[in-house]
Image (cartoon, rainbow, N blue to C red; front, side):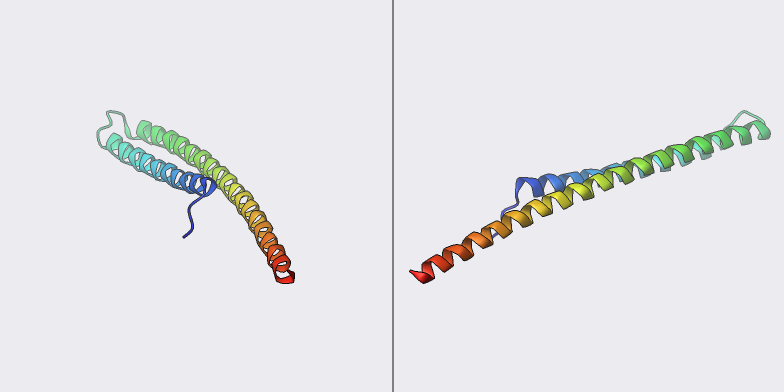
Length: 111
């Protein structure tokens, strides 16, 4: 039975946490949309002022979403690289263990 290693557990937790960040951003964006809709319904401003306000808020929302998307992409790239490093280290240690086992077997078979 394989036991999870610390590196694997850490990597798994980081991936789960990254997923949580994505869902939080999604909930935030949904909240922004609902807030904007309610703001339009109950706005005491004229139509032109409201359209200007909504245009500005839409631009801010787009910039925010692009910024978060960049951050999430960078975080995902970091996690991928970290995962590759962990996999490479595990592959190297497994190769060393297999080689040591092979050498032990050859020594014992010659004896």
